[in-house]
Image (tube, rainbow, N blue to C red; front, side, top):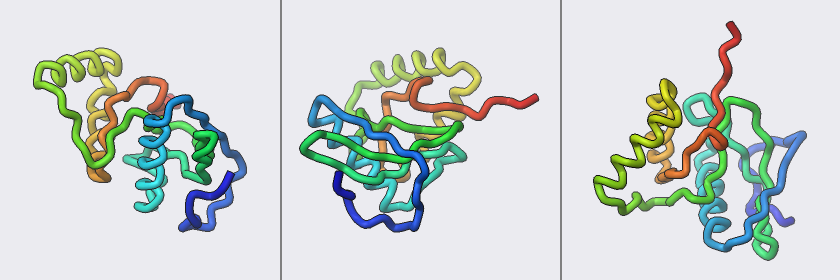
Amino acid sequence: MVPSSPPKTTQNPDFSRVKFHREKRPFERECCVYQRLREEQTTRILGFNVPQLLSIDEEFRAIEMTIVRSPFLLDFADALLDQAPDFSEDVLRQWEEDKAETFGERWSEVTDVLTALQVFGIHLLDINPHNISFLQDTR
């Protein structure tokens, strides 16, 4: 794998993972999002750790990134960059109701994270309990 561009930090991760994509479009979307986050030197969003892009292999549709601990935010294959979703009000309302039910009392925290992503031009619709992990209470 070839680095996608020289890293802006001297971060030398102890652990990394490689994510392979079957389809070209989700691979391209995810690469663009991770490149944007790296350009902005973003490692956390509202306290959620974000994997750092290490390298991209276009031939194999592979993305190498750091492994992050909870709380984390990851998986941007379905995110839109610099383009808000073009859905009707009814579709967006139903989406929000579904996500509010999925996340329960954490939904307001999730919406804050989604809003913070939009500051970077990232519109993440595929938010689910598998790609956002909350720090567990230690009480």
